Length: 87
Image 1 (tube, helix red, strand yellow):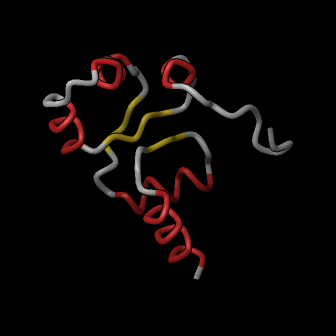
Image 2: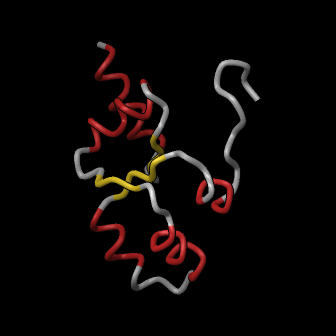
């Protein structure tokens, strides 16, 4: 645990029961409906606090500043977007 960040969320269940907003991509929800991994599909349907993150830059900014949203994304892409915002 980092002192300034609080406790890390390590499982989907912890995330599901947290106050953190789930930033989703509509296309990912469509693709998830074709998956044979029921836990992730159940998660998508069960998380109450969620927002459309079609605008990735906006969601990454929020994630790195407010720290109240989480997204499923390639870490390299998130680092790229966050770096572009700093420069």
